[in-house]
Image 1 (cartoon, one colour):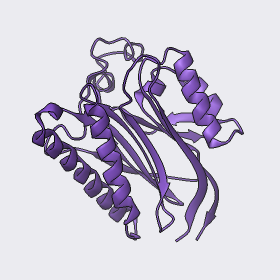
Image 2 (cartoon, rainbow, N blue to C red):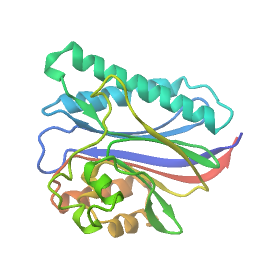
Image 3 (cartoon, rainbow, N blue to C red):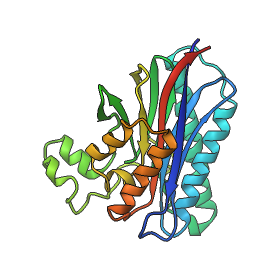
Length: 251
């Protein structure tokens, strides 16, 4: 089976207001030549959100390193679901073991890239975007109270960024012993992918993100430019970014 061969970069930044960085970002390949991208945005106050996101990142990276080749999209989704649930159990058990960590959790947006499809897992309000026909398109749905209100027609799009409950999550990893995760597969034809936490998309408008992604710069330069722009616009939150682009297809 041919695999996508490309280049990527990822970056986190504490921003200009927060003291600790609770965001995590990661892009890596495994011995099978498969590609995994993920972003986590920890929650729980002080450094506890940092622990939740770091535990999640590390256990998923460990499982991905030993992931077998799987024939077909269905088994890819099964594997992804099992790994994310394992991360949920790890974070939840740690929060129960130490009362200081009670209530900690994290968002998670994770993507497995193959030649013709991408399999995505979504928990919370970090996001995945794809550049389709040179237009930036959000391909995940935020699992927040205001996103629910918008999808059900109770508020307008203009109210999404100003609603008093805009920061309320409907789902997070590690908060409860069981987890609901949205897993889906999309057709993929080598388009650039961007995963990010809300520290980016709440500070940088989609047109500016799109303009930077469309540049001929290297992935690291694009990540640097996005972080710089988020901080120039206030940097009110931690920032996490993963960027991936295909160069060719190989065995």
